Length: 316
Image (cartoon, rainbow, N blue to C red; front, top):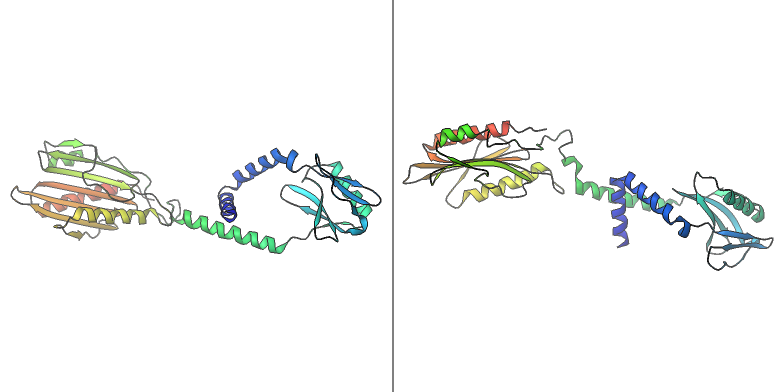
């Protein structure tokens, strides 16, 4: 639990250092009077003794036991540590850095004079620093892998769309030419499957069967993958859902990054059904046409509609 908490905190710090510094500084200043209150030392000719506020005095330490006086500087605090021949470090007064504190300075000078040891800067503990650095690097690598910033459209080599154009007004003339008495509904007839972030589209219907539908789907980047990879997954699922057992998906070259066309005749009523599903970067376009006419004419129509829809999407 402790390692997880430290990892999350380090990741948060890496992602928003200004926020974490502000929170840390504010919290430290708030609890300083009670938690980080300076200890007061009683100095005598025989030795020294710590006296913490509202608590019993520590055992006295003879001057003969003092082997050194070190000054340790942290991010916010500066403190003196009296090193003795015992297996422990005795914490002397502390203060905030870059802030005048006569009591602190007087205590440090008196400690140096009575102990006979000059105050020296503490050597950094390389093992602790290296371990902390390793944890920081691991957490930063984990955060980077999860966020995958190179998959964001803002990176130079990414050319992905951030929004979709409206299709209903754009293709209304086409719909009226294909299905003169058609009625419009505000959704694409061919549903996109998978992690689609946003969809735009319209469907026009004439009578019971006649249908013209065009839709666009936009994906966003997810953990460990780009928006284009997410769109590929949605494209693949949509094609699989539209095929059905009796239909075959045929690749369409030169239309987009990947495209499939699914054609079948509706026997007995003189209609042809064509579904076109194409993907460019993180955008998926779907076109459905159920209308009288030959299969070749229907495929030319849906391909022209798909090209027009993609041409009105801004990539990059």
